[in-house]
Image 1 (tube, helix red, strand yellow):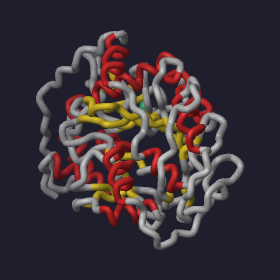
Image 2: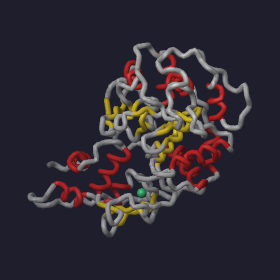
Image 3: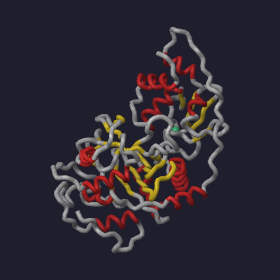
Image 4: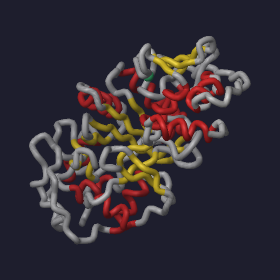
Length: 374
Ligand SMILES: [Zn+2]
């Protein structure tokens, strides 16, 4: 497929600019029928996959934009959760994703803790409008972004011209959220500054089918019209998205207040319990919550920090040395808004890593991390 030329018309917003170019009718081979693939609100309808090959160079470029590693990946299950697959992600896997036969996830950080993109995620009522506000705030500074519908709201994607440290990218994202005072956009991917255990957080790779809703969600413009009329056309655009310069990110972050000093953990207190005690009780007694949590959350000297479970710019997260628990003022924990190390790890597994957050796999993994026999 020929890619439409950009920029024949000068417009202010990069998102509008690309879309304007794509409205030129293209001789699109019928993976999806041009112009008839979307409902009025810009959400793509289900389409019939055909056996025609997608352009391998485009698929490869698309993978290069979204995937930080090619030797492992995540796959979405029917309940919407993900499993990690430790194998090379091949062209055929990506084609199956784009045809809606399987659904893959894109990890947000590479093994060097670098990110090629940032994704704001909003899934509450009203968050879609806030994502658009954010897109406009960035566009007013000449920075391109891409709006994608999702099951309960949407994503706003930013692509960088060079891989950037996760910590820098997250400070940039939090800075923009705080500056615009957008309280409903609660998550920024990557969700960690750096990897601690496992491959970290992930976002559903765009242009596939969400396994839970069985719907395909495309990229749209600010007026809700599709960014391009078909998934095949959207693939062509997203294979070479407009990017934000690393220099702009660094300059912006330099204007933000200094990050708080790191929390100094005390040595791990290991208390040995009697034989009859439940594994969960042994774990709770073995772990000093401030010390454990500080491996995953930057805490200041008071034990306060940015909550990993919502996109926090008010340091809502706190640990208590005295009571050995954590809490979040935005009510991320169990009542009374906090919890034990087990609850922390359940939420990390479920919300940050996209893994099964049920009790048994959580305590099994914690016992392994803590090297407790069971
Ligand atoms: Zn929270």
